[in-house]
Length: 102
Image 1 (cartoon, rainbow, N blue to C red):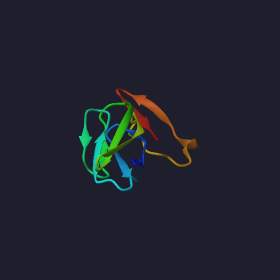
Image 2: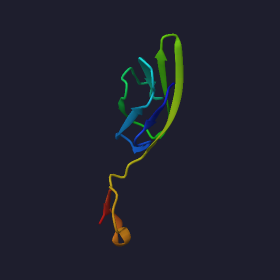
Image 3: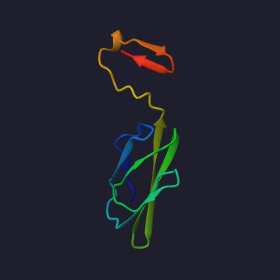
Image 4: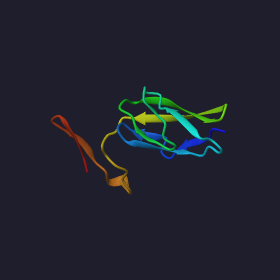
């Protein structure tokens, strides 16, 4: 039976999504990442180039039986600013063609 998850189902553009394959009793794996890329690895990693929501499909096989599961991945535009603790003192402004954040 196909069973899988993404450790990080929401990522910024270019960040690698780590897939975990929890399928039992299978000996073949076919991943379709929803962006035209595929993999036959058991538990692949994949990075996306465009912001949107992708449906990832995993087909697993054992003999003549095939099982399928899907995972939703959301790729967002990254500001390049990481998570900030105690951000109550954060300031941001435009300086020419740049966004400055302190």
